[in-house]
Image (cartoon, rainbow, N blue to C red; front, side, top):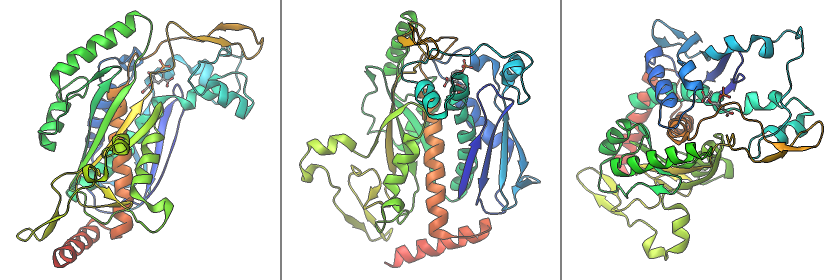
Length: 386
Ligand code: EPS
């Protein structure tokens, strides 16, 4: 599987090209639009989301509601571009737009300006913007469609916003967890915690501040054997960590117990192995490994968490330096989200789906949906004989 995205936040559109999806997968724009809508919602989002109404347009790779096996091109319009044509068009400007010269601490503005020798920091922030994640969610939507056909479900839920954490929800089935999270405007399965989270976001907004948090991505129905112990860049846990860490504002990733495993003795970390003769499958009474051992999926649900820092665009801005005059000023502020953790959780879902699809197609091969399915059935029959 190969994919790239292109597009600036206030440019005309966001684009993605996805190559390697087998032919014959039923695929409708509506399948993708549902996730695009979820990414836009969520308590704590700012005014920009009232302007955008993200919808995908397939411009290649899909015909008559099915994939062709050729590269799939996905396009999402930036409605806000209409207000930016004089500042974001590709043709030379009639009059140069006012440059943005006061970098926001925590954003890519300064590091990117230094790297690319751009003094109008808009040249950096337009691409660094999390607007790009709309394209990731679209790519992830295609992957989720394929995974769904193969019995793999991926969903995310928010487990903390700022200092407010959701209760441990281990007693819930994945289906319940998913349903509760989907019903929440914070994507949080714990309704009491969600109420406190809303309060924390309101307080941060009043202070002109922003809030981060933690989301968890769960994948069920993942067959054992994805990824590999044999090489560093083929390890599934490493690939998931990279995929999640690459999301804008993510500063930490855990799989299973994660950092907590470092504090416990081995007897309270590793998952004992059992065997269910009827199902002809190995079983685990616990899933503290989070579904991977040795960089390979082990058949248990995959559980990853990602920590998001608070958004760097602060109404009550931090001190910064004007990159032209070198004078100290407050950092630039136009408008911002107060908290985008629920949105980031939808992006996390997409990144895990893309990573799993990639690993699954490596394991199974196949150029048509029928071939992939047959290969999965064959592998499952092999596992039952093991
Ligand atoms: C973002 C700044 C805001 C967010 C944007 C990410 O946009 P604007 O500068 O237009 O107010 O709304 O997120 C999206 C547009 C999106 O679709 O998620 C940033 O600087 O990263």
